[in-house]
Length: 515
Image (cartoon, rainbow, N blue to C red; front, side, top):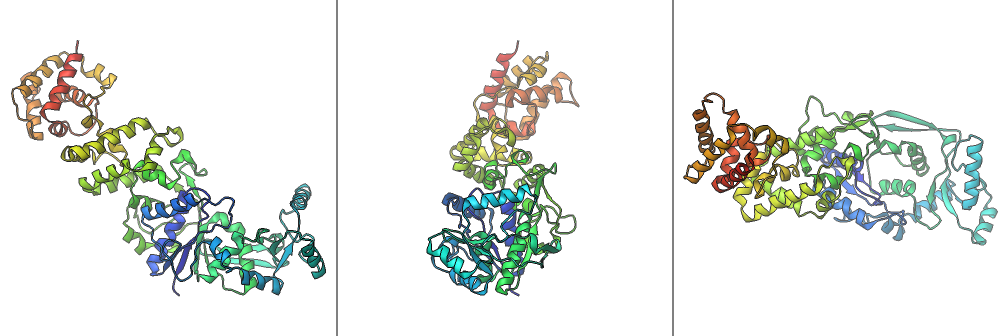
């Protein structure tokens, strides 16, 4: 059997993690089996359809690296791939006519007020809620004809069989069963003539030869309706794969406080596509062994439905950033610097960092963005210097955005000195003399072109003070004077990058702060 899968979003909102995971599983499964991956846009709800949403879905999936063999943007033998266009082309009409003629569907002329009254009655009497036939499921043809002659608006509903057990085989959960008497008759064609998801998705899956349907477990309650519709046509059911729900690390429903859930936000945060795919794939999938960091080729080779889990998949933001850090350390400095520059050119990233959002844990967002812009600007005017800064921070950061504040002290003329660090280290009695010593040596032409040279400068003073085996008293105040912080890259490395003139200016400024 040739595998054909489809990712079929309704572009009414934003592309979030759950939808990305479904699209990713489609991609990995089709690649693993040498099959086809189809993008289909399910836009039958025209009141909520958003063309910008569709654009975001397509562009974001392309950024992640998910490829489609067929779809509205690449074409294919089953075009069109937007359901609104398929409806306009009349592709659904023969199928609904077939259901009406065979008695598996019927027209229902209930008014909105009548439907409200029915639901209220069901709720008051603690009955199953839904449409189970009303006055129209078994209405005589004469009654239907009269309603049509009077111009009454109608929908077309599936006549779910009664007194039966509806079953599907779920690839993750096994056999699922429902009593057909509690499955309501879903609308197939709305009053405006547009097909509903329940109808269009099933018909399109059949027409496009879809063999496996990956979707979230929230669709399980709809599965008996879809199985009943497939049975009404006499078609073979696809392989159903209802993927587990995604929760936060605390086991609760995934929300913004667990980390950004809009995929574009991860790009704005400086998460790279490959580790994002790697991380998302593992939410509810066990590839076997202790594998965590995997390449796209590794995931394609290992992906198997048997590894998908029914229990909720947990979203652990710390694990995501750890994976991203691993990817960052595997990149070359030029690649990293170019990626940072590209990040600053993203309109969405600019918007993301312009808004403070405590739920997402964004600290000093405006400062972060300003620091990123400064790094990008330096990359344009003095690329070698920016690259040297990137190299020193590459082992310490976990996102591209982290480079902004991490490299900030390299980019500014005057560093902001931490008050606590200043109070701790600038009050040592030897510090004025030490700063005077460094300033004199630098002004006298002491060579500081390499980290070994810079180490010699500091250790010369330490030896002069008798600190033969411990240069820490000299290192810490010097780091604060040059970077404003007590932690960061190795002191002698950052000194060599800063160079003589920057060090002189910062030491002179620090010396002026001393009492």
